Amino acid sequence: MLDLGPRTVQPTSPDEVLDAVAEAVAAKRRIEVVGGGTKRGIGRVERPDLVLSLEALDAVLDYAPEELVLTARPGAKLKDLEKLVASEGQMLAFEPPRLAKLLGAKGEPTLGGVLAANLSGPRRIRAGAARDHLLGFAAVSGRGEAFKAGGKVVKNVTGYDLSKLMAGSWGTLAVMTEVTLKVLPKPKTETTLLLFGLQDRRAVEAMTVAMAAPVEVSGAAHLPAAVAAGAPLKAEMAVTALRLEGFDASVKARVDSLAAALKPFGRVDRLDAALSRGFWAQVREVEAFHKDSRPLWRVSVPPATGWRIGEAVGEVLYDWGGGLVWVPSHDAAAVHSLARAAGGHATLYRSEATCTAFEPLEDRLATLTARIKAAFDPDGLLNPGRLDS
Image 1 (cartoon, one colour):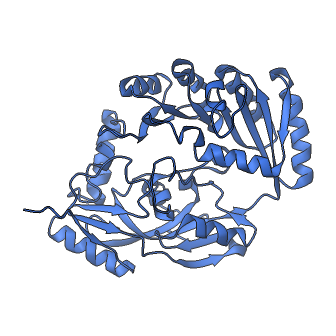
Image 2 (image 1 turned 90 degrees about the horizontal axis):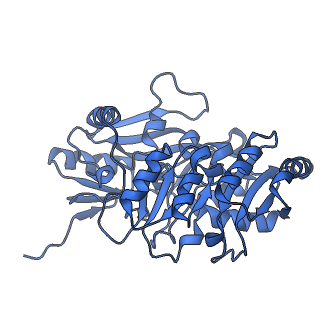
Image 3 (image 1 turned 30 degrees about the vertical axis):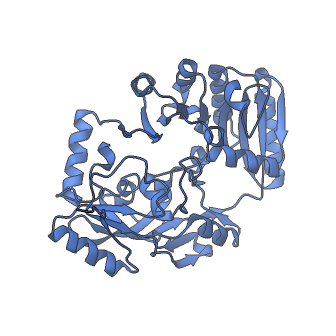
């Protein structure tokens, strides 16, 4: 008998989402929730009976630039939202990465997908993570019930902050149908300071000095020599980069102050605004590993210990001042071991093989997570196995 695979449903309204989920819950059908599909390969859903595509939920419901608040459907495309807020001199301050080329995906990244994965770019070290910009949402739980949380103002939490819980849940708790974000003014200009030839540990020391200085660093990355030598940077030695943003006069004064603080680490060069934007786009999209065929791991560790990963592996890319390390490696056991030894965890973002993407939780956290999952999706119907695969 021909296997046609799971049926795909593409709702065009929150009511249709509610109907689709309620029907699936009643029949105990497993649901794969997707947006643009660009991160579909990170973890794998176990044999879904239904694919619930949110692509048609693509609309901006309300944008109040004077209030710094944007409300949209989860299928809204990132590129459209960023163009909209840029027209008002504003931005999505958590600098959401696309990662489509990195992951070999053809779709367009959506707002819901970025929030479900809690993805943040280089500016996370100053502006916070994606979850910190999610003010409120409406969703349908795995019980087939519609609910709302948060609101449309920054200080809106009087009980459990469900917005923080939803961000990073990878669609395993509920299907979002509406999200409200905080937006911020876009910097007038930016400059990036560059240091060259530093070993990983020394580079982390330099980034730590910069982060501790009263200059408001908004990006701190390090490319070891082996990575910096490749495309697209093609540098002759390791590169350590530190970004400053804001008004022209403020940036100039802070650049001079930071350059003085970094003198013990060697020669300091500067990138103007245009070159700086290009460089940080490369860091955000992990372009150094676009053409690398090895499995790629996203390792999150305390910034002070990140250098240990690169010291052991060699070819890595550091972001967030050393707190985010991109690691290409076939040795899953070694990567997990290095991440744990450095006080963090590893997630497999890209691999041709079928293997575990998310690191198993320790007992107490696993128990708490299971209780939360049971409250929102007691039958385990939403993206089943996604975080276990």
